[in-house]
Image (cartoon, rainbow, N blue to C red; front, side):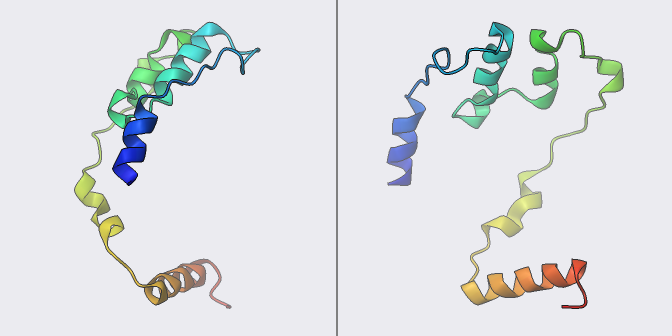
Length: 101
């Protein structure tokens, strides 16, 4: 079901122009790229900063970049948790910032 919805949404094109009246065309073009449905179609941070919209602000010398983070670093997000486990993790997180609880 989720895949079917994704396929249906991927083909949709939102018409921004009637809804956005104040934004300049350059900002609108960048926004379209940043909000692409397929993540692989979205620009990286470096590509977005190099967009003509930012020509007065972009300075590669002042914008350090780093290697992409491996997806393996987020393996913890794939773990299936029971509700009680989620509650316990949330409680532990609260204690980190509010030990008096």
